[in-house]
Image (cartoon, rainbow, N blue to C red; front, side, top):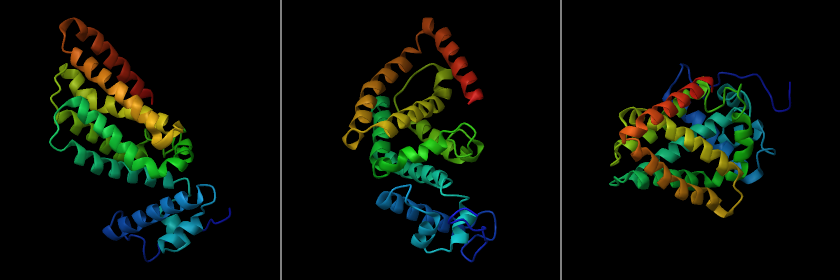
Amino acid sequence: MPEDRVAPEAADDAPAGSATARGDQTRQRIVEAALRLFEERGYERTTMRAVAAEAGVSLGSAYYYFDSKEHLVQGFYDRVQVLHREEAEVRLAGATVFAYRLLATVEAFVDVARPYHPFAGKFFSVASQPESPLSPFSAESAAAREASVELMAQVVRGSDLKADERLMVELPELLWLAHMGLVLFWVHDRSENQRRTVDLARRAVPLVDRLVRLSRLRPLRPVVHEVLDLAQDLRRTA
């Protein structure tokens, strides 16, 4: 077997059923331990054995929850998504201007994800493989993806935005796709505190706001629907 690899075991700290509160807590403890070690030691120097020790579980139990160190990518993705939603909801409270709400949500991501930026490239290099079950577009990532789309739906629902009816329905997923593009930019952003990512968002969000609002103009609706059809076709091939 590869170094640090043991057969997974349903240890005392593993859930007896498909999902229990105790099992969820153990899984989260392993993820948080891994993130601490990634930050302290770097991704390459962190082993599953070290993660298990840091989390206070057996190595077999660590493998029970995650098939490999690479599979912690999904745990990382889930964790950042939760932190992002919590921070965004704080910033969205009481705000109704769509552009403000969208930018606040983007900036919330940059702030909560900042501690993980040094090793995010390693994580996303695994998740970006089209055939990987860890891809944000995979069936295995559906729950986290749907939660992220729902956050974008919150941005739209609580705003003053008026736009083409069909666009309003599809906008949350389109905003999530745009967010994925911004995350890729963020991964490669080497500026201090990823200021270039924030600057990009501050320039792009007002453009998105204006373009979406223009979709209400009757002469533009056929073009808007053609773009939506194209986006729908592209999503089917993702």
